[in-house]
Length: 110
Length: 280
Image (cartoon, chains in turn purple, green):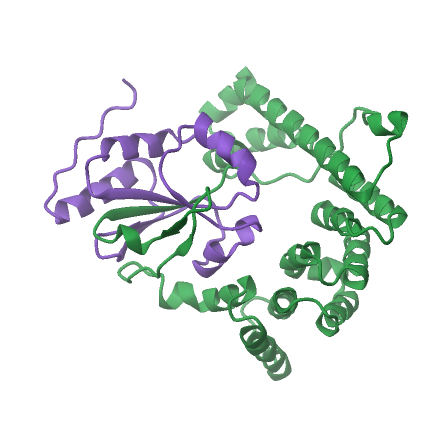
């Protein structure tokens, strides 16, 4: 279910890049098993026991899931709700601004 | 997660109204074996039954997605047909389960876990009567229980179906009770949003409504400045004032999924994708 996140994290493993999840599951025990099953290796902040009503999504005014923000190295919000190839392009652009040439996106069909 | 993301993918699918299961309810094992029932055991049974029904629904959806009819409609971008097929998948009988939780709660007066049954009834019921009875039971008997806190998080959405008078009475009862400030803040937030919702979109609030709205808002920030309700109140303006492209993102401080401290700031100097996600 998380193939794009996985390929992004793998492709940029050596770049100054982090995928930071804000997780809104209520039940962490069940989720721990899913992390292993789905090979979710990137970090997540927990939104707390009240799920989607938790404090972080409330503060960031998130009302739909998934919601994506892309931040540059200075912590400035540069893109919002980019998905798939758009997300790759957004991250690559910000890495290039830092003078880093990101590894190319592999064709996921092969 | 699987279900919700596929709905997004096949938009504009709209969540259909619940369709009760046609199968007879499975017989309860504990009734036959008759170990001592408590509010907690009944609550666990109801949760398990709900989880089974959800799993059946997910399996049915998987099956549907693999069907030729679904694939053909998807290829043709025939959203009406997709919606119709999706709506035909039976949903868990949320109202039936909720009514049973409420009936069971009546048998366990004095048991602190009665709150869990009332919370269950409130969480899953679509019937205003069941919702109201569960909330009234919680406010009357378990004002300090976290179940009431959780129930009040959703209260704003329920205000309309409860009716103005009943909602106002409920809200007042919590506010006069010895419930923790965070719970009261949720109720104040519910009242604020219900005032805003009761007014037609685009119409300004009356002076009286605006005053009530502002008073509730101020009281939330006063009694529980670090609560979820306070964050929501601040979040109303946050999006407009702060969370725009080009703004520095506010720090996120918390714990990760294993209880270790984590913050957004520790990744400064890196490109960061923040992904609000869930596996529910």
